[in-house]
Image (cartoon, rainbow, N blue to C red; front, side):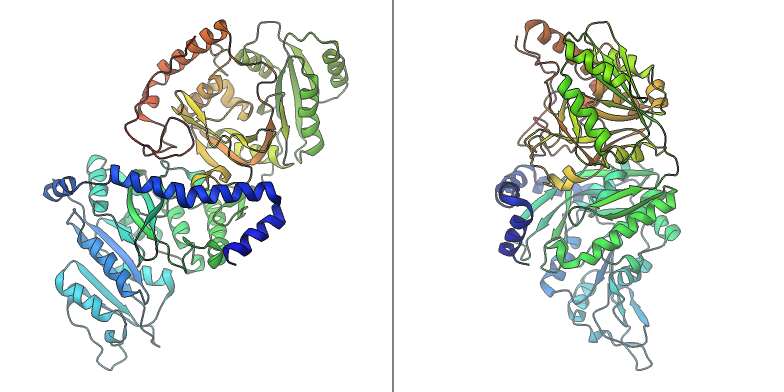
Length: 631
């Protein structure tokens, strides 16, 4: 389907407004962002002086990398560019293991030709490597460099089989996966070796990447990734390239599985990261992924089967780790949605602070009661200084329901104290902190949040919140963005995927908003609830970080969708007294979490600007500074 046909199809299915947003987002990604990245590369590229320094460095305990590449009728230009990029590495301890399945054959035998020596067919059933259309190019490079090894396969075994044949040749300490038409940055292996030298317990490494146009003229679409993020990996293969692992992982877990062809990387990455000790992310672009017309990088629809296999790979991962869940293709190709099937149906206590605004409260409750597919819940409405008669009339109506209680907090407004007070009345094993100015959109939203929260490794789950105009208000929090913390993708249109698909991917983060937050009651109690010194601001962010400190994951659930009519209940912090209180809470948060604020949120990326959590490229030096409000 060409671009014009796709546009008309989307218009017919989604209407003018959403189509306009889609076109605007596409333009930004393909034109504005490409020009920005060109300037970014000029500013941040590795200088010739640095490359020279890398070549001169001698490691005390050097490791050897085996770069494994499956070949199949690779265009000569691309093969040369790949092999040249390996030979230009500033780190010298490597071997290049190439398995060539380009020649046709019948008996399935293979022949290895190490270090450029002999091995032509002798008429006894072994194939003649000269049959391969890549033979002459490979022979040329073998003669030049003894670190290059080639195995000519009797037949094409597919991408998994061909890669496995290359893996069998690997003798290095670490294995580097590389596609046959892509390019390594000249410092790729050096950066990996340097990381291992500083952290000898690393088992797996991955880096940032970008794409190159088919002809190699343009670098575009940089993917600046977070540190290891298992829930994001189950939502999309964000790791992809470059992926490096200790050889013992291959020996213990096996190689690629042909039943996952097209998503064989996703399957292997999941299996290896399950077993690995330390997983390390290098926040530098070390790999250039070519956008060939036949690749999923250029047109996902071209290989839909790959995404079907990807969903199967994620499902197999859940089975191996003992989580009752199944993955399926999500709203766009490349994204997977997980559905859990727990046997338990625990009671959830919904805690809703309220001061008047009875219309908001009624809409909030009725949206959940009328839509939610999950029904085992109780409501705890925490009344706080209401004055309107209609509010108390509604409370009387609510009290007649078996699953609803109204409790009274008589103190001044303190969001932390009010929620802590409400939690004292909870009978459920899970707490759902919910603002009265929210409205459920998807009937499965609450169940989705609970399903994730029921995992033993998860402490908190947050949701996606929209403004009434269907733009995002909250899709997770980045620590340090905008000063203290910023919401991701604020203002992005509903249904748009965002940077790296992350607006529509369930993922691990450091924090989510308490406007709609699910938490295990035992975890809530373990950390002492919300810190009541944070009366209005940052209480939820601080709470999430304290839960993270206890070793639990905080998960943003992209499938749980709500409207949020923010600031209706309390008003803005615009008076002198409120600004003074806000500044004191900024100072308190900054003192407690100073190290994280200075180091940067590991679920973001140091190449991205922290002025806002909008994933724009960092323009220059950006150091975190304590925000100071102007009174």
